Length: 280
Image (tube, rainbow, N blue to C red):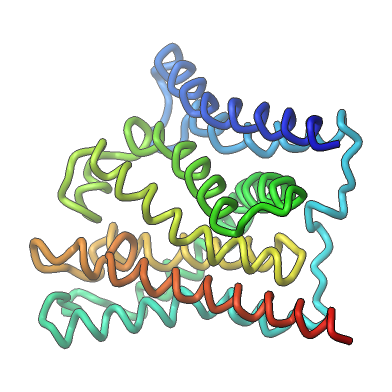
């Protein structure tokens, strides 16, 4: 079983790494396409999930491992957490930034921002089903079969998730959007983003493991995409030059530390619950 699982994981990772570059190649041939909504981006987005589903079908894996069931019983608090984590941490970061005079909120039109947030929730919910089936439902569930150290799982999933994004940051994402988040080159931003995704992975993985469901992760991811991306990219807030690395709601060091702390808190709860259950 272990050899078969290793083979499946390797196949998945290889396809994931090349999926974006396949998309880049397609877009280089089909040049007359809308920016940010190309066939190549579509290939990049759906290929990891399709690969996971094909592997599950051909290897006759247990679909229960993927976490399609919502498992509401006993997990309502985690569903609420998935809705609140990004807003709460973002508010904390904004408070720190405003207090230190690193963040300017004068351009924040709350009514307009709430409209943008609400209007993008549905599409981001759908998009993140693709991602969470791949990263948590398949990759995380397969890695946990080996009883690996938690940090090894975080590292593998975080790095694969980050490497998958490299074509997005180097090619697909408009350079102006990158510069709005961090005033650095595409390559530098890709490195920063991979580190960020490692910190986030702890939170996403632990939420998946504690609920045994992908749906809290889908919601968590949906709120993130609808909240913090437009907050910065659409110019609702501005950050003082040189302070982006500290308090950016997307990639700031302080921000990432807070999300890492949330993930480790969920991990501590899961491990303690496991000990208590074993003692019964």
